[in-house]
Length: 247
Image (cartoon, rainbow, N blue to C red):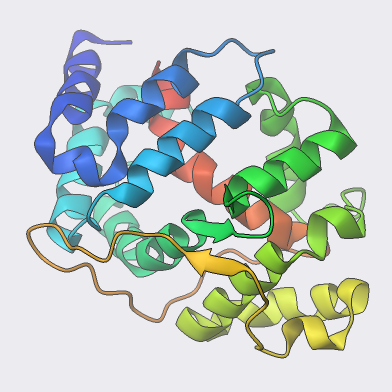
């Protein structure tokens, strides 16, 4: 990658402003080879992220602006449009609080395991090791609504997924409809009734960075059957994309 992009990413990782994303925790993920399981480094990154104050909207805006400007050539070569940075900033500001809340859910009945980690472990038992090469194939299939992507109940119908759905339904109701029917069909109608499942707790730090990050109602990409499981994985790939593409 270009010297300018390297400098941008180095500054991002070392900047106190990006501590709210635990940006340093992304390095082991970015440096992992294509056949190494990513579950442990992802768990470590999320554990650090959840202990940090929430990013302010200004911080999110600054990070997106710096990366899209400093690495524009690399992102364009990877097929990511950088001309609409303002639209991307707005979208990230809308979904960040919801994504962060889901990232920081834990299951107290499963040794206080992060829900993302639990879901990835469950998914790994079905598709094999959660490696970058596997995710690069799987996630486009999920987000495109491929009918070939289905998951068993032990992946989809967990308390972690139920509470994640509840959070989306509460924070971004316009997006919950795309999940409701496939989840209710596979897991039963009570799965999407909004009741809080037992054992699931939010461990995200309640502190805020220099300014509060306020979620706004918006729309997110929709997914078909099995796609809700992909929401978590896809969200992580959005957060990690610059590092995965540019490292």
